[in-house]
Length: 265
Image (cartoon, rainbow, N blue to C red; front, side):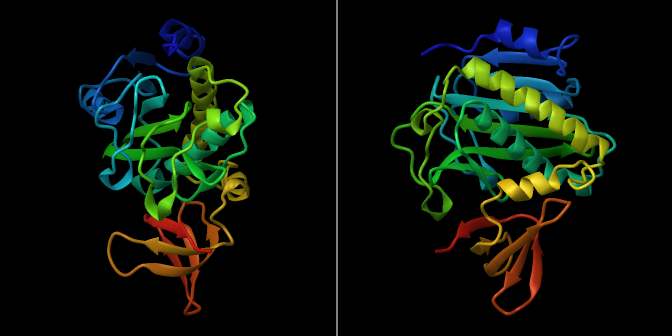
């Protein structure tokens, strides 16, 4: 296992020559998101990054476990203070991170697509996930888990999706420091556009690109929502707030802000 090169990452990414205020790499932690939530409450700066070689209590959406073995992936979180983005606009941030992940995959010659709202897929497997947590108004912690090397004994996720990795999909490099630097550069650029547009994906120039990379659109889906019965129909669109628009089997159009999507065959 080659450890992440923290000095190399700071030189490339931290001010004055990079877009981030601070970047730390730790050998192990429970959850980088949990650590940055605490840091946010203690006043940590906007665009603070924490990367872990290993997480012992990594989480995804709905408190699901995210398997984070040492040296096999990128487990990172970014503290953001997008003060001009209203709370109603924060929900689209996970989609912005998804686009940054597709950029990183393009850089290493891996063909990947997005599954609404926060998954990255390659060859029918789950390659990465995103978790955006609103700590308080104007403060968000964005977590990303990206599988770089093959994982063992990982149970399938919702809809039966198996885990996969960049290495299993022919990546031109599995140098995690190089991939982390590319991912974080792209995230900084895309997040800056999103922030300037007040969280509106269309105004940020990101919506059409997201649509083009989203494998959920124009497929038949079942969406499990936090409250109520599952919604079944055709995924018709993603709107500027990052919400999924579904044409239901009853002929109605309904907008979903959060939920688990299964692509039906």
